[in-house]
Length: 175
Image (cartoon, rainbow, N blue to C red):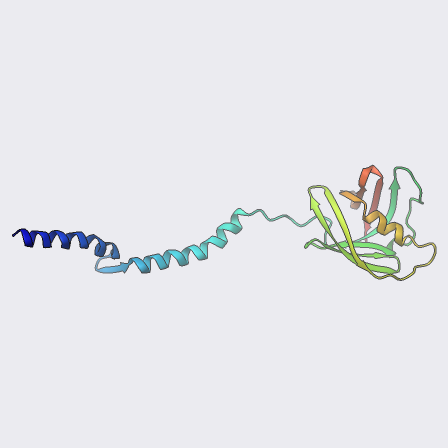
């Protein structure tokens, strides 16, 4: 009797392990732990990207992107140049949504990148053509000013690039 009672308790001790491997799904249906785990894993893999996308805040496109801007005027704190830009169509910049930019500096063309943090704007000019422009060209001055940009604003449809140390502003019209 003791021997059969020992066997019964051993059988009951093993029973919970087997019981954990099988779970009732509904009347008469069974689902193993492995299948349940696989379903949970697949559901997690499908749902996680949606949850991450819903929780992450995507930066809106800058309001000045994907527009060709023509440099029309420089307003310097200590004026050393003429305020109006002759031939604004020769001094352009286009900011792309991905943080890249393309510019034209009179007879030269180039590219670069920009970073935006609120109204703070930083421009990094990259490679450009090195054609010698005519003597009255503002290409070097234009590229120099672009390298000194610290911020931006949009005023009456114009893009205003603020220069570092309050040195002045570059004004652009849509073109």
